[in-house]
Length: 338
Image (tube, rainbow, N blue to C red; front, side, top):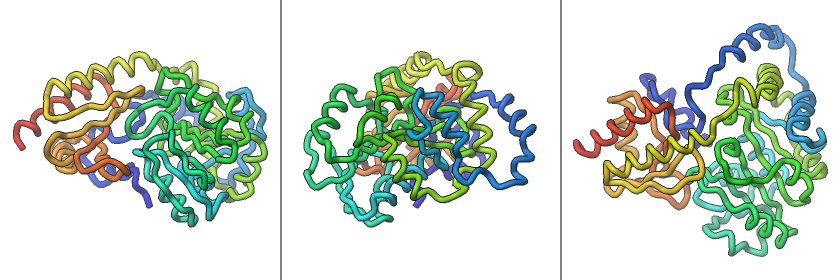
């Protein structure tokens, strides 16, 4: 089940500003486009059965060993791969969060429970799933608190999705630190870090014994040749062409949040990232989404399908200041018209 609404961009062909995906806009891919064009002949051959060259590149990037890395076809494949590798387990999912965790677990016959406080972990849980920074709230769990939680529950396997790790200034687990734990699987996303959602490049870092278990369940040729080539290119430019100004992104999020609050009729949740969760005091997020898409070519994320949320919630990720101002004005129009 595809529930992230990433395909909404195809349902509304007139979209010119996409706030629905937590992927930064305005990224210049000219260099990547040229590189992929020059290496397009790779599509004439099968990719590596196991994406070892990309795993070596990722290991070097993080200062770990290749045995600590499992590359996947986006972070979503990693989610399903973990659920498959630990089939028929009991999984606890910290909510509200991305519903793909529960979908993957149910597909592989897990018993699934939602958890709204990390302080009440059921003893029978085998896996604990959490998104940090959280999707959709943007909240980051204090690292000291998270370490203590993991260390006091050594029999639980913690699946920590850090797909949005590049978009916060709060301390998070490093791949190197996580690899020293026997009960932590750390998920990452080049897709989100480099704004290439069409290429699907994710990976897991963990202790070698955990990585072996995932690799043994991974399908051959799961990461395509263009994605592997792009991964090599992008990792060498993380601090150059693709350097992120996180401080500027967070400042813009704060500015947009204040502008939305000044419109009235909604509450904006605090966030440690450039995306934020918003709750309408009246009306439905689906109606606002439809209005913005059809009348203004703007796409937001209806967040009503996140467990623990209802029909009033939506999520946006800040884009350029000009796009953000336009979004605020269009929401204001909807508020005053409907």
